[in-house]
Image (cartoon, rainbow, N blue to C red; front, side, top):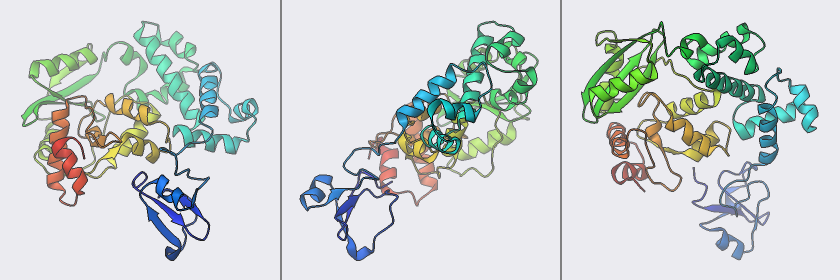
Length: 349
């Protein structure tokens, strides 16, 4: 994204804009380019009122209002969320409310409410509450309304989750690579974890901690397709297939992870750019949190996200591994921009 690199002024209107301004593009002969807002204003141009190029970041209207909506939803989970009721509460038309909410948060009010309910439900199960009381206390109206959603978002049924994966079979394999040991774990539905570690014992202990009651089986043969795909990628080859996943995530987290998978190998994006890509421009911090809890390294490429200032940023499995992963992908994608090549080598532009 070119925002922050330069601004352009339109001679016919006397206004200057940031590159991402949604206004209609002027004719080329009417345009002049400047590196700084101070320079263009000294030349007599005034800032656009749509894109606010004089400000460091694009202001997002209605952010405070949407946060109020979120607090209202969080405290009214005991009943189904109806857009008409929310519209009456905040004096907006249903269409405008839905559009405004999604522009700021990246998901609809209903999806946000569902994410809150699921979070409460999981917390209650982890505290030892019975499944039946937990689902009603979390705001679900019936067990069917919960079960039809949870297998996708939770990765297992509520009872199995409460019991630490009891009754599940999780196959896993551990390989040694140039980046250290890597564990790949999967259920019948898809890959549930890809983790780097210093020893095989440490990786097995992590898996046992997450699924203490599951039947964990070392299955080199059954995991071979995913292990070979991962090994080839760690040797500099691009991923050749889409990997089915079986992971726990909210709607927002899924949106972030899908956006990460859309980043071309050898390229990087900032947390703010990912937030903008999913339609939630103010959610850069939440994007960073979604990256931090990603349980599937490489296949969900959170290593391709860097800080807005160009620095490499953190990585759950270590900055050095992040640098090495970017270098491998850069080598396999020679078209990568020079700036991104420098990032993968030094950790900053």
